[in-house]
Structures are given as C-alpha cells and as structure tokens.
Image 1 (cartoon, rainbow, N blue to C red):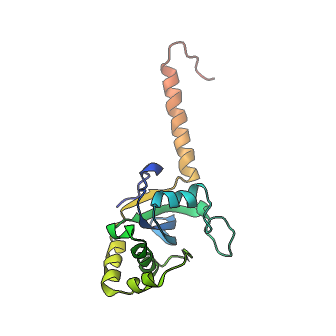
Image 2: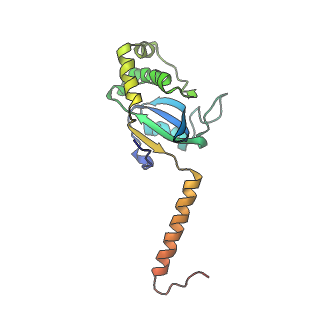
Image 3: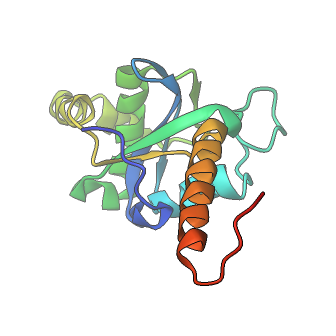
Length: 168
C-alpha cells in the first residue's frame, strides 16, 4: 500500500495498534509502537497536542515527533477488547522491533494471551500484511513546494481578472 497523505480526519476513531516511522522509504525504521482505544485521538495526542508522556520530553527517553515521517495502523475486530489490544501490542513489539515502546501497565492476562501460539500467529500475519492505513506527516520542504505551487496558480488566476495590473 503506498503512503497516503489523506486528510487527518481520515484516521480512524477505532481501537487499533499503530507504529510511527522515522526516515523516508526505502530507509525507514519503526520509532514507536502503541495501542489505542481510539487511534485518531491517540495520534492527535502524540502529534498535534504533543501531550502524551512519550512526546512531552518529561521522561528520560522520548519521541521527537518532528522526525516522524508517517504513521501506520492496524485495525481488527478483536481490538475492541482491551486485553486483546494490549496482547497485540506486545506481539507488535516483537514483530516491528520499535526503537521505543509504550510504557503502559500490561495486565498478566494480556501477557498470557500474547504468548498463545494461535493468537501470536494471527497478529504476526496481520502486522506483516499491509496496514489498514497510513498517514504521511507533511514535511517542511513539501509544504514549501505546495506554497510555491499555490502562489503560481494564484498569479495565473489574477492575470485572468479584468483590469488586473501585472506585478513589475
């Protein structure tokens, strides 16, 4: 699946597992893996409000979200159950090998489920397949290019207006 720069509001408000990637394809790495009851809300907490513990710089190890290139997420009906979601996150740590892992308290039931061979196999297959979605964060050079394009288009449109005096 190619990286999409779909609008932020297209990120699902559903339970899921997500990974934040640094670098640009083909040289990317998984910077962080987490789970959320509402993926859109959690990513907004990390990337927009920067109010999550991993993004605030209040701990010894953190995530500099300015260097996150894109985010991928995986949804599954079983993720509505918190224990399943926490167990899937543990499997995701093993599969995706992030530089940084969420530090939330993991219940023993989630640990046990993550070690169940059938559950682990199902989640590994999910994570090794295409993610449910991806969101590419806008980078400064991309924004500068888009701004220059918009300015050129505006100039052409202004030239079409009757009585318009061209710039000198």
